Image (cartoon, rainbow, N blue to C red; front, side, top):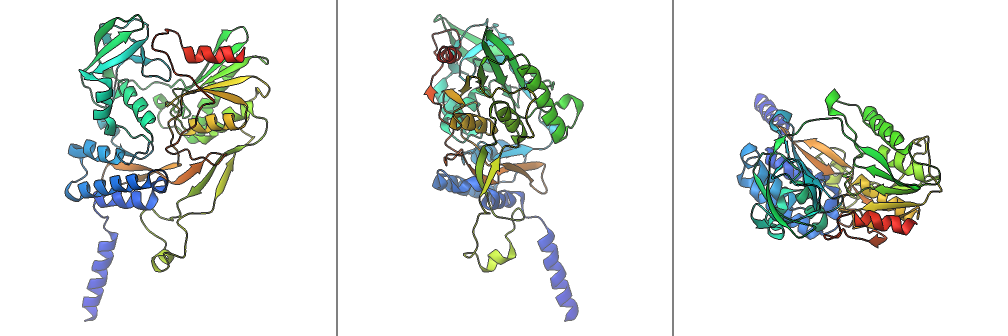
Length: 427
């Protein structure tokens, strides 16, 4: 009898040690760790999660249906909730050579198209013989996005970079009204040191700061530490700003910035704001281990809050660039291309009344995402771990940052009329 008890106990331990099916892990991770499940369209998110659970019941997570998994995951509508494939050798990427007008759906040129598109402004009429609107509707679950405007922006940018080589035909209309058709010639994506920041003089007293990326990892030198990634950014930022003068009017362009790290955010803000300011107000989902509740919660589930105490994150003034611009006239350009930590910069510059925000609403995504491996698979889930508020109490997630003045890029005017508006306002 004693030996049977021991056998049962060992069997129980063995069952406990086994990882549940990957599909079960996915749903449990999202239910236990996904903070943004509790804000903005909660009912819709939970219905999408239930649809994912039903699909997982009859399907294994593998290469043959990876796109279906991602499609259902994307229906939850969160730009940070992403399923990653960790096998780098299988993630062959291709690029199209398409260059977009900043912050818009208009193509500026395409050196890798046949026929080649000379520099102009081209409105996208069709993609693969589908009207642009129909194409966006058809492909809407192929990207992770928190808002309709963010989704549209990301979908259009998929024409620039894809994970699989496929022939793409574009029907375009130039600023002069000429309709042209061109095919993208895809080429292998080359890992090269990223350009994260640049600066340019527009006029005698106008300086433009372009911030493309807040995660400046140089993959050409192998794996980088967090300090190295931050150092890469600082070097590029300081080099760009060394060209700016004390009395310059400064235009900060964030229209193509997909986000990155908070250190970089602080470094930028500390160049323009003398005092420490609130980056954001946040609250973490209160779980100690992914997928496992604290034992006390099992017995007293109604006695404990889902959430950890409120936190307020402030800028660290030790991350201050050598050159600062506290008194300069600043205008910041934003669009749906400004996502995640980029939106923190936009929000703070606006709310601190140090910069006029110009352009269109930002993407609307936040939540300090954490990557959780799915045991027994080569996949990982990127899951937002907290909910974030702007310093004025508004959410980031699903909301975005509204500009002080909405200015949309004209399809008729060849020049960057958003930038022109910024210059006119700063005169």
